[in-house]
Amino acid sequence: MSSMETDDAKMEEILLKNGFSPENIAHMKKIIERGQIPDETLYKLTLELKDRFIRGCFISFLCSLPFFYYLITGSLISITSSFIVTLFSLAVIFYIGPINLTWKAYSFIKKLKE
Image (cartoon, rainbow, N blue to C red; front, side, top):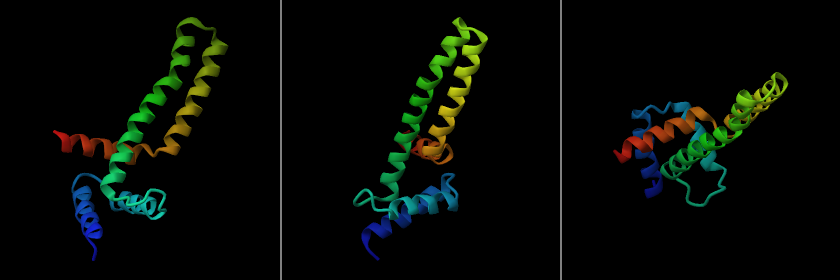
């Protein structure tokens, strides 16, 4: 077994102890096996997922700004249409970056830094 596989095995144990389910880890391994990033490891992917969570929150905030603007200043039609667009945008954002997995990665990395 190579050093990278050993590191991934250790990381897998650590992730399991810190709230990741076996399904989460299987999904992460599937992402790694795609081979889009050379030398991808579970730890590097966890860092990337943490960053995706932060970006997803920021984009969600930006997508919801028009709704809050129209909520204060707009008519019922503009409030309704901006609400629908906001919901659709949030659904797309959470589909692209699975919120459950990215949240676990964010929480895990945050706990490591404490």
